[in-house]
Length: 384
Ligand SMILES: Cc1ncc(COP(=O)(O)O)c(C=O)c1O
Image 1: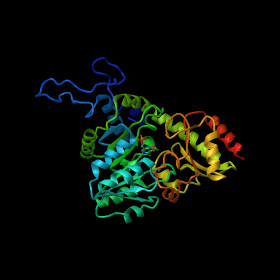
Image 2: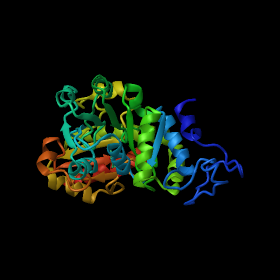
Image 3: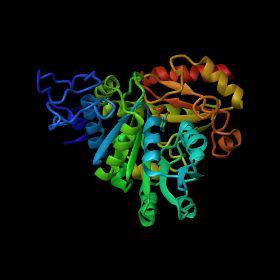
Image 4: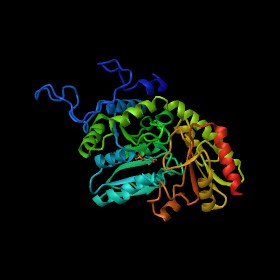
């Protein structure tokens, strides 16, 4: 079956008791067992260890990414936390993209580093930087592509070749493009990370996360930590995410089409100094964007003439677009990464990787493209 059919049907069956076409929200802590001898005969014991509504979402996301299985979490960060815990131990080293979500950077640098794990953040636009930073104790490479917020790309196939050669794992944060546009496992990666808060939900209703594993053994290692740490997704969140995911391809296509129009508009506006969008020919990695994904996504960044003050004035005054931290929903959002999503990265590091104080991040939603452009145009004209 094709993607648009699987996003509706994968992982779910009509409810065996009532025929309910939607998987019910199994709102329960415990599951009554038939006898001590047939413990777990129906597959569930306690909702920290597994829940049928959550399981339906896990199966759907595993199917869409083409993995052996998937585990779902209370947030995207809980999923990343689980992945790092499952595959790293004291004395190990991991390599990450130098442009990553600020929360990922913070988790590595301020939490896992306390437990004797070393991290190198490298510019993966040149894959040789990954090879150069390999150490004897390197166990994991984590690429975020496109990276939040500069949209820097990493060549998934080339990095996977390096990690396979070194006998280590490659995890890809695929939050920005989703499996509709990019499937890292098909390109050789081992694990796929998602903040389902973003496009899978798509409606700004939940926070959640998922990790898809290439093999059942990797999934078992993740599921062990998911249960041991108590970071599983809740059934209500799983249910809402199951509903949101049914329109993933439609939303991605419309939001990306609008994003292309907006990026083109921004490039032509005299108040805009620089624009980043992988679909623009001016984007330095446009060819890689074309070759490893089937769409460019709906995230854009820009810097306006007048720098930080002008950027802040734009974000404070713009109508229709909301100033908010998240992305990927039907509502269009503007964000100031330096003071919001990436505030925990040291200013010098931010500047070095291109997260300038003047950078404005745009998450394009489902509103009419002309309305979104008119609102941007008015806010930009007012800066003059
Ligand atoms: C690329 C990326 N990965 C992971 C996360 C973390 O997800 P969550 O906010 O659901 O914990 C985010 C959040 O913005 C993100 O942008």
